[in-house]
Image (cartoon, rainbow, N blue to C red):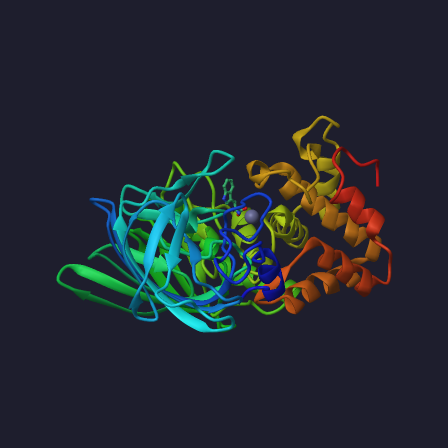
Length: 450
Ligand code: TRP
Ligand code: ZN
């Protein structure tokens, strides 16, 4: 379920109709994703032993070709591939760095559905991102913290590893009895035999690979349905339970408050995974069930929850547009404060605006971080939120909240670009906002006083 035109454009190198491209032309991560096909569904069957850190996996990938293919790539980093079939026939394959190059026995015609089954095993190694942080399958003392932004999905399953290609997922994860494996969406069931427990999860709405998780640990689990009908599944490391409890209690009201502002909650399952993963240093908005490296504070809970609309349901088409995720989730925190007895968004803006001209917040434009090294820095988060606050001041509250809701509604389960957001804001307000977005999203340096 990709933006077909974009994928097709990215996948049209010289030898069209032969091999699929090794990437989708993302300027920051040129090898992320692959050309020539569009994944509909991943069916992942995993077994993990926290003691040996050994993972074995089988991925059944249902996809449709967007060009004739006699060869295509998947992204997979590390691990050992033991076999691949395409439509039940053994396929040949080789590895080139993070590219798993698959040659099916017979070429695949354009527009055809196919099923690739990859079996693999090994000890997953997280990737070190350009900013020095770890992502992917990150071992913990009792399991693994599994967070794939921006690159790490390929450390635990073969994927079309770019948010352009969203798909539904089934997970069947087996871990030693007493541990839990928590993935996205809804729990279909769990069974224990011979000292091992298998958890079956389903994420039926389209999801970008980086938002998939199968976090393993010793967790206290709570499950309930809210009066509004949300199915909550929380898994909490006992070491974090006391600190997490008062914040997690607010999850239903936070999701309801956000639904009131942004439109209906976009997914079938909800909840949180609160792990104890001191070396990770960040939380991630894993789809339907954000993943925290420690007990979150309320601001972080509001932030990761807001990503369910902005980032998860409405996905990036390029990592360069990361402010569409982080600026929006940060502004949700400002709005939450404003409407719950904290400082007004204007006050939060004013405090940031007081930063001197050489402060890191002005170091680069939110709409162009320059490389994967700067995806998660202050200009993306804080100045991205400042840009939204300026939009709000320019168009007024009624129109501003209509724009936010229209963005989440019109692009639900899909994608968006900065240009599309600007266009929507101009259409909803009837104003020319080119100058405002140029100043606040497109230009480095401290803007003059608004
Ligand atoms: N997207 C996450 C958030 O804002 C943060 C994040 C993901 C991150 N990966 C990271 C931050 C790596 C720093 C480094 O909720
Ligand atoms: Zn965020």
